[in-house]
Image (cartoon, rainbow, N blue to C red; front, side, top):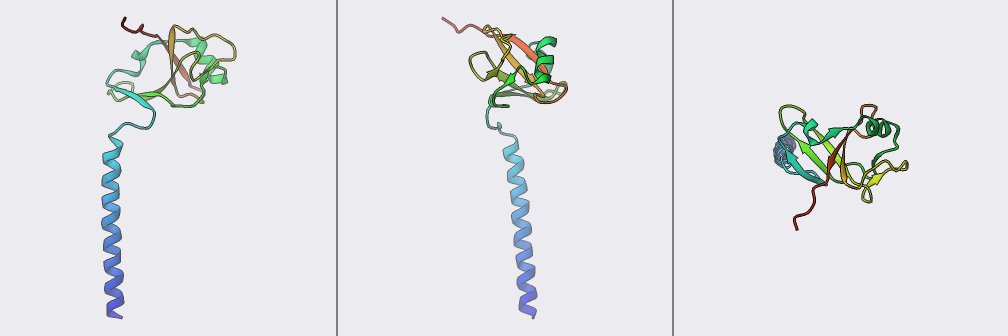
Length: 129
């Protein structure tokens, strides 16, 4: 009986130690990029581009959005405007049945799929030639 109690006690300590180790490992990996994250920025979320009210309304209706949510994203970790935006362009990962997207712009989606979806647009930089 005494051996069984000692074995149960030892097993409990081993499980507790493994749980503590797993929590520590999870904290370390949280500091790394998430799958599909293109970049991390200390800037304010609203500085990604110009807020487009018309496209934001279309996003709320599901008529202008990323095809695969957060397939490519930017995480904003600054004190003001923390969040994550999905990125899409016409011809690549953009669902745009009404055809309002401009190929010269990149679109950033904040809270896609929710009633407060916001779409920011930014002119796509030209590659250095």
